[in-house]
Image 1 (cartoon, helix red, strand yellow):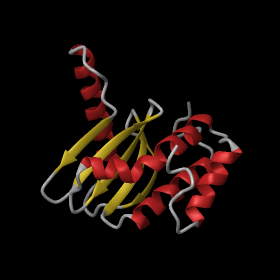
Image 2: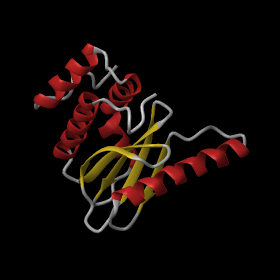
Image 3: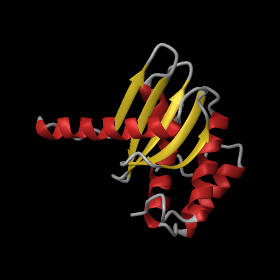
Image 4: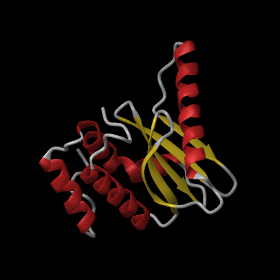
Length: 158
């Protein structure tokens, strides 16, 4: 598995481009970032004025870990998604490949199921790209094609 230090430049560039396209296609999304479970931001697109994303990333990773620990102690299903729905903004953190989190911040706040639906196409592609480090050429081609196209990504439904 890759970390912030071992993520290839090509993978980072593609992931950042995918996040940027996600923000362009969804103007209510203020920011999107990938973080590891330690709270280290791997790549990001967008900003939230007045918010230190490095600090937020650490808090999100800690909250996600705490929620998973609670589920484990209660012998419940492990969570794969964490939501905060505030008055002005919402945050959704989705687990990717068991070791990374995709975090989306939106304003106005969105229903979590809507954010999940809008990010579904990215989940497996980003996870596989980052997990492998040297992504499979077909995944890179599909992602590059989707990023350069106005149409829905060709890998949106599997």
